[in-house]
Length: 218
Ligand code: DX5
Ligand code: ZN
Image (cartoon, rainbow, N blue to C red):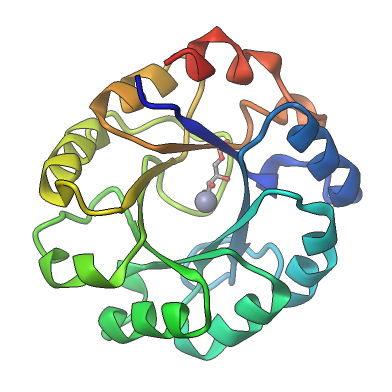
């Protein structure tokens, strides 16, 4: 079995105590820290930007996985790279020049991720595969934590896994991951699972179930 990475999303963490929350999830075995940037334009919610990413970077010992739910994207890439992002993921739907956006992310020294909303197919990413390191499959409509997993995306993950072949591309699943849905996505071919509310349930840190037998044993 492939070892699945867990990437807790700090969107569901205590916004008044990110440093402590990040230290706690990393102590519990988090592999990546998923940072949900929202601009109140591409998605109907507003979270944080480069200054917060810069402030939390020293607390992250693992990987800072920045998910940009913003549009336009290109003019902000350097700011997130300078803030310390290891992975920067942009949405295919955020603009007309996604090929250039992915090139700019790699040009800024970060791993390039492409996020696909639940309604977006995979037929238009053939010419992007050589420009990306990660594909983030949204299993909720972006903007909020605690939403219900959209099961139709399991088929998308299977098709992506086949399309990727032996290219070094990670498939990340984002939204509605729980001990129940995690195994489904792991079996479909996912490499990284984002979990916000399942980890920070009730606004406090970590739910051992997410790290328990359900996921790490996959
Ligand atoms: C939604 C974000 C997700 C979200 C996941 O727009 O991109 O990362 O925080 O939260 P849960 O795991 O609660 O669905
Ligand atoms: Zn996200």
